[in-house]
Length: 374
Ligand code: ZN
Image (cartoon, rainbow, N blue to C red; front, side, top):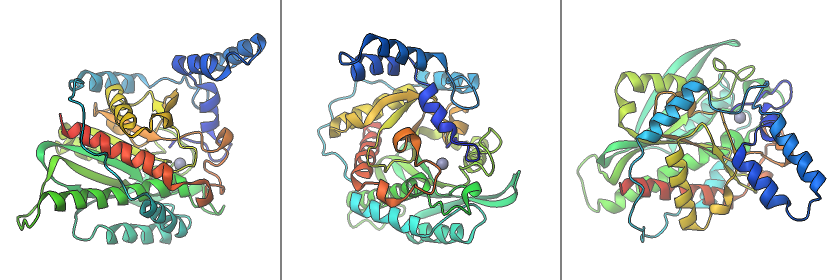
């Protein structure tokens, strides 16, 4: 996701410049009152409202194209009056997901074009043996030269007509390649949760098709496509043209072949394993889908880990948001106080917790379940 690795983190600006109205209300009404003196409240509100920037002084609202797309995807919102869900909450194996995170991180820096990147591709593919797997491979022409880029897609077909896509990037930052940066949370956790989701959906399909020899076996619900996205990170400095190389390519391809029209919802998992996980309410995402995630979080008693902060995030969802696909960026930032661990060699396993993978993983699986009921 967006950050300036050369000149300090843009993300830091995002936190302290961006808060929009709901956060302002939350900060002044919830965190401060009544202990804070009135002068502090005035200073706080002034400091928050005076600088509305995400990065490089940009205003913290979605671009007009993205905003229009968010509106478009909102207009397509399915009815919200669902029957109460009495089935048990889906459960990931959080310990196993944490072990995956550890194994992925142990490869070391996994920037595009590197040997470790190649090793990780094979590691992912080894976990998908027997699944329906597809590649979206191409060469990216970047300001640092040409690089092979490979999105890996695992498909779990369903009986309902439509696709739920869950994405997460597996690359680490090219500009940080010589710093010892291993991206345990940023790149590691997203790779791992998708591997665990693959276990879940594979198991679900086998449970729902006992003894069936017909191929393919189908899940009761929409098809679920898991996508390990590549080259999410900028090779030099985050911009529209230097970021999300993999998903820009995939969104264009899916637009041309008609896949995009079939996608009922798209999730991006990014930086989800920090001990104090707190998923932001991303203003570039589709509101009804964010609300559905919140309903799922409430079912699991996880809602205190969602939406305390709100601002516009740039991530792998943007190429899809711009094309009107209902999309949600599921990301926890800041990472450490003042975002100190983000895009630094401090992004290591000791900052992470299996509990966070459980909170976010179970919530997204429950959201998929709620979508299946529609
Ligand atoms: Zn990143």
